[in-house]
Length: 102
Image 1 (tube, rainbow, N blue to C red):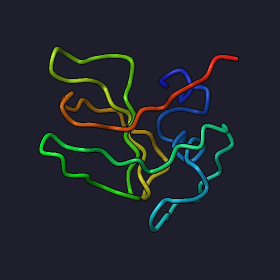
Image 2: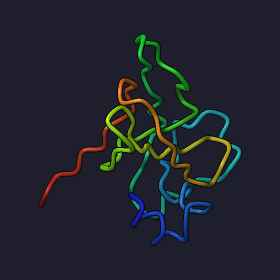
Image 3: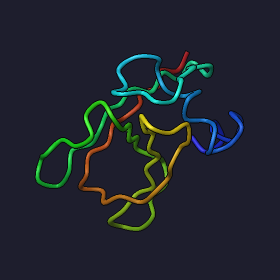
């Protein structure tokens, strides 16, 4: 994901190039999906089972963990063209992007 965001002109600009052109609530930024990645606002499930940010944020599992309890999770938002990468507890449940080998 980091390689892809840098290819798409860095963290501050890659979000709109990764987001689908539909499903984002109150999308104040124009989404282009020029990468074909088509990220949808998948929100996340927190430790008590509550879903948060439905339609507003897209959290994706990342291949790197921060520590035994946390992982790096990139986040896309309806109000920004950027990609934000923070650590979140592993007990939270962000979306999973499956990629099929050809």
